[in-house]
Amino acid sequence: MKANYLRLSVTDHCNLNCLYCRPPELVGQVKQEELLSFEEITTIVDLAVEWGIRKVRITGGEPLVRNNIIDLVKMLSGIRGIRDLPMTTNGVRLEEFAHLLKKAGLSRVNVSLNSLNRKKFARITGKDNLLQVLRGIRIAREEGLEPIKINVVILKGINDDEILDFVDFAREKDLIVRFIEYMPVNWPEQNGWYFSNTRVREIIERRWQALKPISFFSNCSPARYFKTNHTKLVLGFISPISQPFCHQCNRLRLTATGKLMPCLFSNVEIDLKKSLQRKNRDYEIKASFDLAMNEKLKGTTASLYPRKKYMFQIGG
Image (cartoon, rainbow, N blue to C red):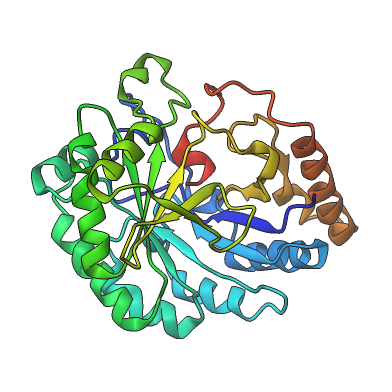
């Protein structure tokens, strides 16, 4: 297997402060000058495509808070060989940017949305922006940034009572909803939030009967997709705890500061920003992708509690 999917973080900054993403204590964010420039990003991605990458997902932090992000989308969409250029966003600024993103060449969006209740949304994210996110999803659909996937992290005792609400929401709005198991990557003491996707599926099937597995997008996707009886609704389940998918993962990760990582749970980091300054730049960057791939093929030996970086620093 060779990775063909790069998750590209463009910033560690975000306009929300989600419970499961950022630590309760203050952690410094990188300065503007530490971020890869758009030119540096484009150079790396261009070489990554030559190496074999075919899909590039723009992530953060929140990518839509990066200044002039539309310019980067245009630059990346112009790289021959990229077959899919999606973005994962929290949706807060999607209403403002959807038209520009589509025009710039973005393929589609995934929206992280963990509650349909304003008070609960504010509790999880620290901000009362639910209505903005819902408007953003509607505008993104109108602009054709589809299929839109709604990513829901289920947190026990917080939003586990909204599972059927999300199914109804996706069915009514013609969206794909994906339930994601909470990963306590830095806070093992918060294992109490974990809610198995087995239980999520049981709740859905009690109402909708047995779900039918379907093939959807790449077979290497971490999500397992299903359809409900008598509807076109597609549901996805991403279950890193109860059903690990490391053996079929096809992605590498690039942080906003230029560190190439083989895996979300790996502490291996290869500094591509330094490689950009060297005479044998092209060779060294491609060799770095080989190195990251070799580390990936060893399998993830890290526990679910890496201490070096938090989720927002790695890229969602």
